[in-house]
Length: 148
Image 1: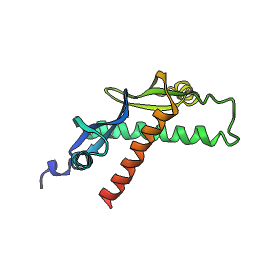
Image 2: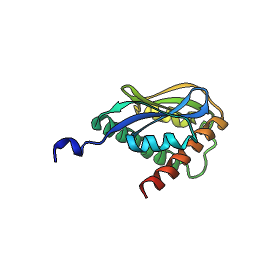
Image 3: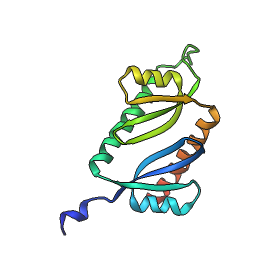
Image 4: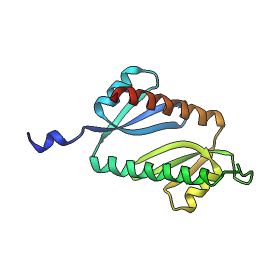
């Protein structure tokens, strides 16, 4: 067995959320990406191969984002009306791997204050936000069954 067998074949994929400029990007093992592409439920294309280091950096960025989401909304126990609920399309990420997602403007501004790599691109609608959530729910379902 040589050291090459331990390395994962990782790829950056882009999934069309059905909204003009919302393309969701993920890093998957190539076999999983091909499995999802064959499902043809949401258009998916493989953009390029990525290194394990890039994948680790991407995972750490998303873990930080998940922690920020939990912290921000856990501190909103009373459903504060003062938080800005307007939806915006943002670009999140570092380097050349960036993700577009729809979130509340108040949360986007919170991330900016926390020095998170985020750029507000434009106003968005709740419908656009829901389309992204539908793709993510489908992904979690497919990944769960793929690895089950």
